Amino acid sequence: MSVSLAMVCLAAPFQAASLPTWAGDPGQAEVELEQQWKAINQPDRPLPIRGTLRFVLEAAGRGWHPERLETALERVRGMQDLDPASATFGNFKWRSDQPRVMDRNAVEFASQLLGLIHCRWSDRLTGKGRREMEAIMGDAVEGLRRHRVSLDYTNIYLMQAWSLISLGEALRRNDVAAEGYERLRAWLRHTARQGVGEYGAVTYYGIDLDSLVMIARFAGRPAAREEAMLAIRLLWTDIAAHWWAPGDRLGGTNSRSYDYAFGRGYLEAHTWTAGWLRRRPQLEGAGWISGPREHLSVLRETVTFVPPAAWTDPIRAQVPRTVVQRWGPGPEHVATHWVGRRASLASSGASRGSDERTLVADLGDSPAVPQITLFMDGRGDPYGNKPQPTASGHSKALHLTPFLACVQRGPEVLQLLMDEPFAPGSRYRRSELECVLTHLILPAAAELWSGTARVSPGTAAAPTLIPADRPLYVRFGDAVLGLRILVGRSVDGGRAPLQYIAERPEGPLCRLTLVHAERPAEGRALAGVWLRVADGIDDAGFAAWREDFARVLTEAREDGDRLALRVVLPGGPLELVADLASRVRLTLAGGEPPALLSVNGHDLGAEMLAGYRE
Image (tube, one colour):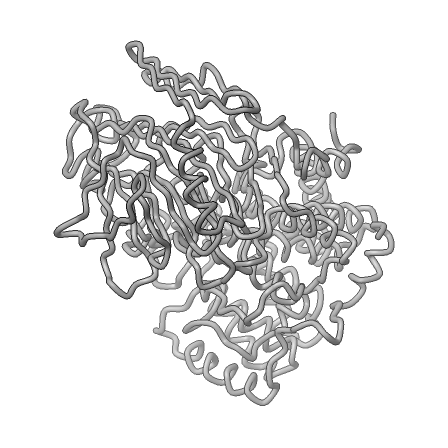
């Protein structure tokens, strides 16, 4: 389908009769609005900025009590920084009970909704309500301009583009709208060279699509609507390439993910209406007053866009497939994903942030099966169940961001992780850390084999100890993941013990953990692993597969601060060499050829964005 034809689909919310929707019961929607109004009408009750504006949007979209929206907008105004001398003038508190603006991204989240409300439903506000909204928007423009956002901060950058476009056009300020249009073009040029910075972001891809659909539907310039459509197609191509259909989820690694176990997030708002999920998802409630509201669906219906089957079906039909995706300027800034029928394996070549997942595998054929992930942990939080307050006022479960080197070819990954979290001058706060561990999180229902014997997990108090120098196999149905630990070093220079633990006998998760340090201690923690996945492996085939995996020659060589890892394979070796002291990758060999966004060697991303490469 051409871009121009796809624009027809955007003229109104596109819903095929056979596809699911977010539409709720109108009567129940009024009940839910009434519940939220009671909270808003209590002057001393703390309110979230997103939830308050979402109430305005849902109410205005239904023409519900416009006089009450005056009060809601007054509450919004009360959360805005109105001091012209302030660095955050025009921005918003995330919550009304915060002492100041703590998260500068609030201006984008608020303005995204302000722009849509004014564009679509300003005629449903009272005159007083419109004047209040336009005053808020006028100062929000300055808040947007004072908030510098990098091009690789994808969700905030695209929200800022839409916000400047929509607020500029609403206020008849052509200079402001022009800034938004230039941001959209700048993002396309940047992405044509370096790829999507927030790659695989299962929460933020949903926000990206929201903003892009708003531009594609409601921006004043036809050329910009076409550019937004191109960006929408790029993201849906990306999503289709990484889609793990057996698990109803986005597979592959994630620059950002708040779900350690299943990799779920707000993207499901879009994959649900695309018909890709078997069950209606429960979306996160960050934007609501007192949690999600099932029947308030004006926003979701407004930004629903079902990707044409011609964009996605031919990609998802390619099984197996290998996906290669650039996400930054360097050769290490690449994510690779092999997708089979009952197994997938993905890796990223560098760390980006403490909410990423840089090695992810899927086994089995059900959304109920958790994903397999490998990461370094300094807080004793293997499953992401212990969020801690951050400087922005939010609570998040964050892990270490080690130096990482990686190569992947097809279903084989060689990856190195190294960190020194307690070293002098470390970027970590020592008070927030209690240990240094490398976890491989596993589905509890999977079998674990060490060599030729199946192993049972212990508990956290009495873990099962497993020889780290033996091949390990994770088996689920006819899918298998093989693991060999080429180096596992504790901070004191010794061999890190390997523990197999299930905290809850009936829980969905268990873990293999390399213990680099049980308590704060200076020193270098090292983990170097080789992994392989396969599917279609029956009992007889499993024994042969184990034998073949165990016979492969692997090497780990150290020379001072230089570490070299090598796996000798029929198609050529996988090899990486790194200087650990300087955190420099000296050699990355044997991996997939680089690409902007390729599927089985076909660089779809480069073709789509050819006109934006400088």
